[in-house]
Image 1 (cartoon, rainbow, N blue to C red):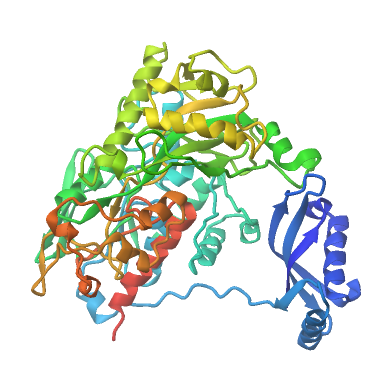
Image 2 (cartoon, rainbow, N blue to C red):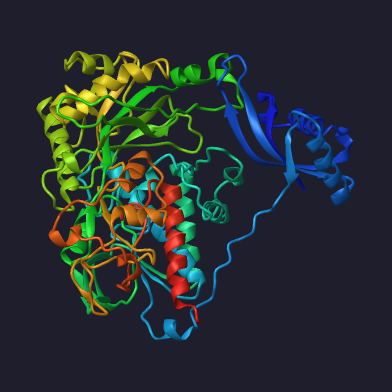
Length: 621
């Protein structure tokens, strides 16, 4: 099969039917300079929208093409295209090679160890557990929240005004926070695991089109079934999944993990033998971060971002992105991605990044609280993306310089203060518990509380209280947003429309901590003797960056280049040979909560990467 890339196609080629097929075939034949009849099969491998010129919005595709003459004709076509100046990019197609999982369940070392424990059933935990189960290791998977069907009921109840369930909500439960999102499967990372993640999603019931979409997404309505199917695959391969079960303690002896304490309702606490635990908790597992810190595991502060959700009419975004082509049925709801770096404000050494994140076409702003008397927002879309509004996070970068103190968990304090301030601000404005503070962009820029938008009906399920968001945002965050909004409007016309709605607060864009791990994917204890070496001489952030992490967001890129906080004299010592120590603690930090991912795709990739490292360590030499 040949692969033709960077091939321009008219929008009508994205429709259903024979006419669209004819347009695609004609374009492929033209690129190869052959008659259409010589093509026996065409397969869509990748497709994106090119809307740089609003008068010429079209698709750019990569096609797999088979010719009637077989391999000989395909080789001749490649040679002929290479001789033509300005011709299309054509090469031999390399088909996908399925993921191969080594079988280590019967290895001597695996037989002499307790089965591995995976903490969390977000993308990192699910994909890690699936790999371990297929390797024959029968992992025990524990999830503090409920199974996905019970979780859906709890979320619906909270949206309808019922009390918050602190254990099962949009942050906690089967599938993790990503279950209630747009289900984006895009990432900035270049990971060899990414193609496997997409195929495993399809194996679990995702639409096959995610394999060729340039910006694949699944949507909350489909993710519910998919995560349930992945869990069933784990169980069928020998794994065990326990819901409403929380990790409550880790026990180490001589620098190595020996036991994990898990707690179920009533409460029932169980000490489980454990020599390998994959810590794949999400970015909101604050009590888990506390127990990890208190167990002596080395952690560090990490930059993240905070802000609000911004809502526009979806039709406004469609027109801004696609011009006159906005209503073409092959296009669907438009998205956007904006970012900029501001000049330093007074008292700052460097300017802040402001950017949009997790944009949800045709979506809604969701109630994402997980703690009492705190308001948190996020965004989600269904697969059809057919809602009236578009929404996105509008975020401002924050870092250790903004935190109060050197505690690794100081970023959580900033998050919690904002969430509680949002709750109080909405109540003071006459709102009900867990209603969100909201303000139009025009009123925000004018520093006045104002009232409802005349164009946008907020989608936050529990309702909003119209007020001045300056009362719950840190001043430096509000100032950065004020600076950025007009400038971002010049990049996307209508972004700072006075009637657009800002809903606060968004604080859970990524984890505020990083649990430091070595190249063996294992955590390090802050003060333990390992083979006569002092283990508190930990890897620096710069050293970690040499072993690429799976995260790919702007704030994570920034985090990789930032030095670790000076929390103690010991943590300041960075001997050149410290990476060679690679202590075998048995604790594997994984995914977004541990600070190594930023979204569904990168978290799932990190889950597979960590699982692979664990499995390799058990293979007979």
